[in-house]
Image (cartoon, rainbow, N blue to C red; front, side, top):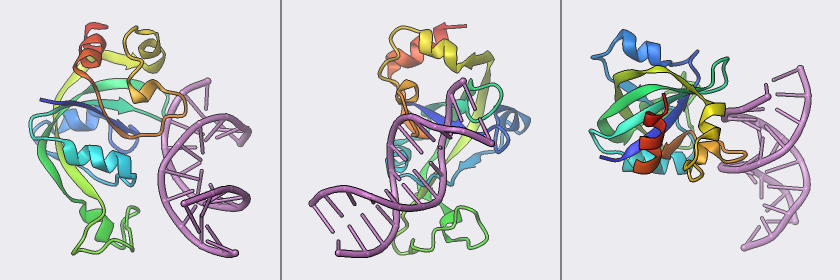
Length: 151
DNA sequence: GCCAACGTTGGC
DNA sequence: GCCAACGTTGGC
C-alpha cells in the first residue's frame, strides 16, 4: 500500500474532525493543482495518508487516515455555489478529482514541522523543500517509517 | 500582516 | 512558445 501526505488547514478540516466521526468517509475535494490532482489519481483504496495541519498555530503531522474510495470526479467543480467551482470544467471531461478518506488514528502527539526538518533521511519529502506548495504528495516507505519512529 | 516562492494566465 | 503580471500558498 502506498503512503501519502495531505495538507489541511485545521479550521477547515482537522484530525479532530476526522476523529469525531471515525466511521464517516471524508471527501477530499477542492484540490486545484494539477500535480496534486495527479497524485490523487494514483491513490488506491487502503493507502495510508498523513494528515498535516498547515497555516495554523501548531503546524505539523497530526494523524493518519486511509483511502476508502479512489479518485472520482470532484463534484464541487460543477457547483456554482462552491468556492471550488471551476466554470471551465465540463461534466463530459472533469478536470478535478476527489478521493474519500477515513479516520485511522491520531498520532500520540503532533509532530511539528521544525522537528521533521531535523530528522535525517527526509530530504526527498516535498513538504520540507523550500517554497513547497504541493498539497498532496507521496511519502516513501523509508520516510514514513522514519516519521513514525519519531515520537 | 509580511513576503518569498510558486503555479497559472494571457498578451504578444 | 515565451514571459511578465498576477493570484495563491504557507511559514514566520
